[in-house]
Length: 261
Image 1: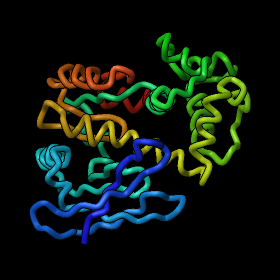
Image 2: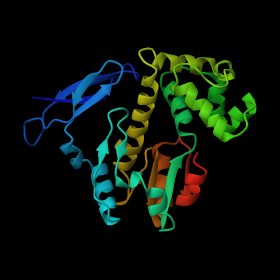
Image 3: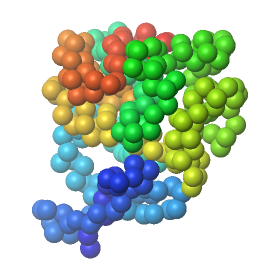
């Protein structure tokens, strides 16, 4: 029986296609069931054991073992996020122990801009934020008279992921073409947007950055990487070279979680 692997449809970023293949070593499929399209319930079978042939899996597994954790690693079926034992207690376990965090400022707002550029769907107000290197949440605060970054982040999340309700409808008028772009993603189901953005982030942070990272230690926390402090500038340069559109930053563990971008 062949594997059915998730692939992006090259003609439509909002859809996925299923591609059959067989295990190169065993000639059979070792099956692990995932729900890929949460709106229609398509099932695929992924060779989960074969993840261990991926470098990202080895880097994460060895890093967990080095820290004294059992390398229990899973991926969810909604956006292919990776989970491991440190997800629950990294804030305290790694504090003041020589680790730093690399993440991207305004990650999902920037990802939306990147996706729209790729699809040649321009929104002048939205695009100028990134073309002029303006911090996205500061722009929302100013243009919509919001109180602070927390309110701005909440509004963006509502706009991107909700059924339609947002706490400040001014965002629709501020970004009309971006609003239509998001609505197109949600045509089948409003959850499609959250699923797609998690999937896109996972492709960047796990399947690319962690897979090819130039060190042997790294711990992914969804849209960030925890690395050893002595490696952080080296890894930062690598991330910036691979994704120049993303604005990466470095934080210490405690400061990062006080002021998450």
